[in-house]
Length: 550
Picture 1 (cartoon, rainbow, N blue to C red):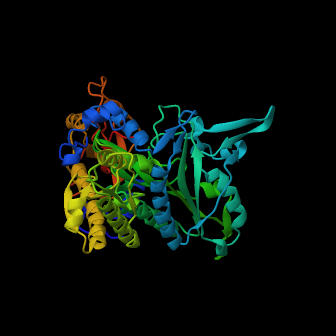
Picture 2 (picture 1 turned 90 degrees about the vertical axis):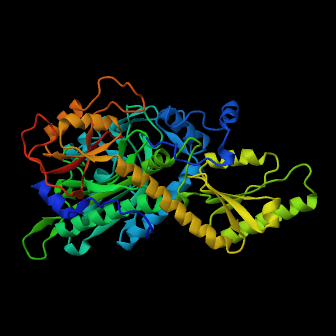
């Protein structure tokens, strides 16, 4: 799926082989630029009085803004169990678009869907101590059935390696049984003790998890990067969000795996990074633990398989809200909008003659049919119990990419007025060839949304070689490319030393910096002799991307 006219964004970077990076290691989005249409001006007081619109700006109180957007745009409903939320149709539709696209792409790679149980025995879960250590505090346990205690506690899956791999051991006897390429769309539970945030940090969430097994290491590693490329496409081609592809450090990688690759996005409003999706090479760690092996066709006995796991969750929806949303609410990229264009008849008053009103509504219906027949997700809002201005506010809040207005003058001139949600721009479009013009407009909107965020990220990405500059740029909402030795102890120290003791500005996080990834595209300069950590005497191995993170 090509993205026309999207900027390269790597003009000052040299492209390093992704496998070379793996091998070497083994050895505030301001809204001031958003144009305001006449329909967007002067609404603040009305919205605060009615409490139907967003009552705070994104910049002045980001956390409250986020909560208002996801509730007032009808994305989630709160539930009586903390950390669990109802995904309403408006947000679930975004997940469905992602599902549909990704499911089609992985099936091209030979992946098949399946479903494994939600529950896992304690003995199976604890079989791989290293892997489960990261999840142990978050595992939810079922200990009673009715009034009776269970003989053995049963865990609710935090992830499914230990659920699925005992079956893999049964299914693999010969090299002819390989590869196994399975994926499941399911829910998982991680009983977070930190402050839960809808989509971003929840106790139950939806995701897909792929689990594959191969005869050779080469096959497995090749798939890791193919899947990562698909994850990147979800963000760029569907969500209009630029991402940085790279590898996680030893500290940040998936526990029990050989290496983890990731796509990382940038959230301009607070300068944080957010992990978009991960693709892990597990090596033979789990296959040895669960005895997933086959007879070597070359006659050297039993050989353990090489495995991968990879996952993407509904966190994608939270990233979309944070990155694209503005002071008027949600802003949806066209490709994941349940409604891409909303048609609103305007200029109908008490003095409007009945025949003129009928003609206007009939023309609006005709336009809707034309757009729907052109595979544009369009709907018609002809509710007569609310004003046009109310409708404008409602659909802006919900983030619909384009509002099409048609009034008596438009009807007379055989035209419509299109209002673009993300920019506020108004365009007069002739009726002739309307469907084609609208399809082109949606593509243009996608590219413009992508490029705007890309430009913001590029202007807030800086190469920093000296520790004295490190925290200053973090506090200015930058993500930083700095030389790094790769040691876990060094990363812990960098995080500690980059914390701010006092949070003077609630819009800037006080947390310390962590590595977001080791970008595959490394800066086009030579590595300096010293690690960014002023107390480290080790030689840097690469430039790592540092930032405050979700």
